[in-house]
Image 1 (cartoon, rainbow, N blue to C red):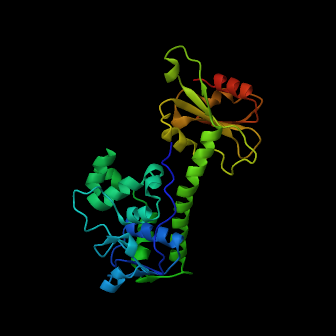
Image 2 (cartoon, rainbow, N blue to C red):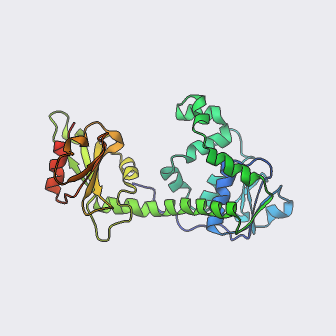
Image 3 (cartoon, rainbow, N blue to C red):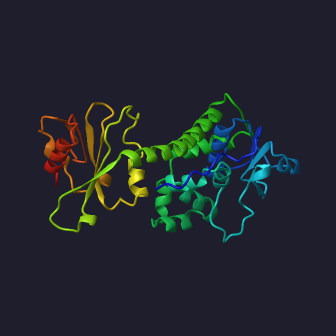
Length: 302
């Protein structure tokens, strides 16, 4: 399951966030986003003074050659080249006791650390993709946000970019803090249905993850299910998911990671199926009993 709870934040209170001038990068940008969500403060973009580095009320991010949590200094550039890749965002998340969850739940964090510390060539090797893929996956949203961040020496509350950065940080913190509770909820309620197949041992037979309706129903009933499957080591066993339909009283049927075991176009004409995607990967039904849901799965077997 997910890592054990890591305790409350240990970061010393601060009133100012300071990061380096010049070009902005994703790690210092996101580190500032998280800091804004944790405790809103103006952001200064300049070289730190000796006084800044000794003043815990000023968080110094990605500059200053110092990593000292007690003084709120979060730079990684002085670390040896053979150290594990770590970026400013990593150090801030560690200070908030959220790093282990972030490494478990945010698939993008490790590549971000490698990109910042090792560069695009090493990151491509880590991901086992061509070097060109790193640029092909670059988003124009990233470029615009980073250029706007780099364009000013001070960002403060009420300004569009500052407010957007705070929202980015809040979304990340909410995701990390809420996902654990969501995984615990799924652990408590989920069932695994073993499909009857003609070959293969019982323990390797394909399975369906079933999440029953609860009262109250979560706002996003299917949220966290994919992550739960991965965390439980079921990724190569589960072939489909049956979870409550948030738009109706029935259930949604879906292939797990597009597994070919099911083709839900086969149940399009069933009277209690009101939607089946033409590509066959998902369907919606008003059926609520486990027996009927099992019948629909059987009819949809590819």
